[in-house]
Length: 363
Image 1 (cartoon, rainbow, N blue to C red):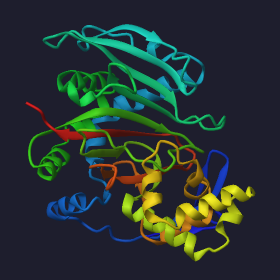
Image 2 (cartoon, one colour; image 1 turned 120 degrees about the vertical axis):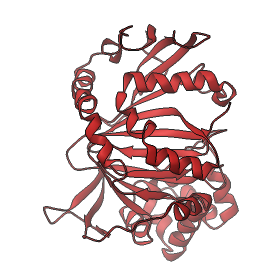
Image 3 (cartoon, rainbow, N blue to C red; image 1 turned 120 degrees about the horizontal axis):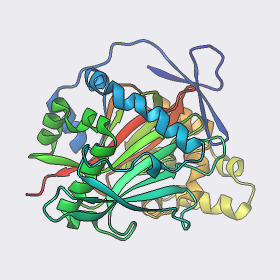
Image 4 (cartoon, one colour; image 1 turned 90 degrees about the horizontal axis):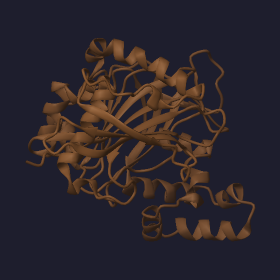
């Protein structure tokens, strides 16, 4: 069981600190983890619920010990100001991908470098595949990184329209991060996901995360056309999550606001913002539509920066702690039913994790 506390007052307590905000602490009380059957897991996925699978890939991690350990030199080099491409120069004997160029992405303040590759092993020699390394935030004390793999024009492409090149981008992730096998070659996960999706499937649009102290992702979803959801595996370190379906998130936000009549005044000094906030959370349909927009600034101060709301969400049963070997499944069917989630790094260790979109295989 996970319990929220206003502050860490015991050595085993884990502070929830992210980007300058102190959001209390959590403590874990020992309990026997429940074992879900494949049928129960499939039902939870179909009901748009996050599915926590403790220690599912713990045994597989042992076979990936060397590539996981090798990440330390890559991360240290980036933190010292070196470009990732210095570590990704293709070795033709190791894989079929040739590094063809890189860009500093001056238009993207969080980007470190985008590195371009050609898949010479594919029948069409797929080009314009890329790995983009980025900081997760602008906060100076947050060293969190992510490596995203895709192809084409970022932000404008419909990646599912070209499944062959999308698969090449996924293979590029495996070539540069062999620990991708923790998900990709895991028979237990593959069998489970094939059963859930009703046929053969593949892992695409991959991200390799390195969540650092004071870092993590704010509340968001991962909906993308053609994708059924996300498989997340914790390889090292620990993370704390709040995860729930969008309808539940809307209900929790409205319920919390109703139970705290002066919440808007606590959150905002600006009277106009207070009025907008109260109007938004008084109308579930308006709130539902607002969450579909790209900008959720009016809600961030509550969802991501308010300690007591974190407490409320945890006590409502939406919290998970992932340790090395744990897996979290996040259904992302569409904007109406997707699982929203927020992530905190726990402890003093930067942890590595895999976040792979999953879709039905296209012949």
